Length: 95
Image (cartoon, rainbow, N blue to C red; front, side, top):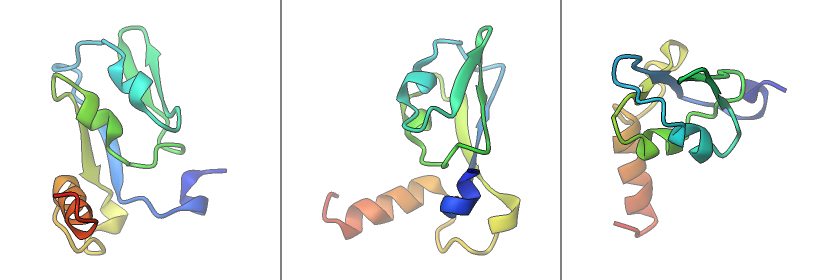
């Protein structure tokens, strides 16, 4: 079942090929197994990726990034992923 049938996701995972070290940390971090290594480069199954950002936080080179899905522009009350995370943490009293 594609993730859009189960939940609304706002972000798409991308990888900067020039910055990626090929370490596979993002593969290990992904809670839904949406990332696989193909050679020395991670590929993301966008049908399974939930845009949670766990892989982005784990990436030591900054090669893993999330961007707002074009079809979700204007729907998110926060300009980006980090701001959304900060708001959620603040609302839960964790910051």
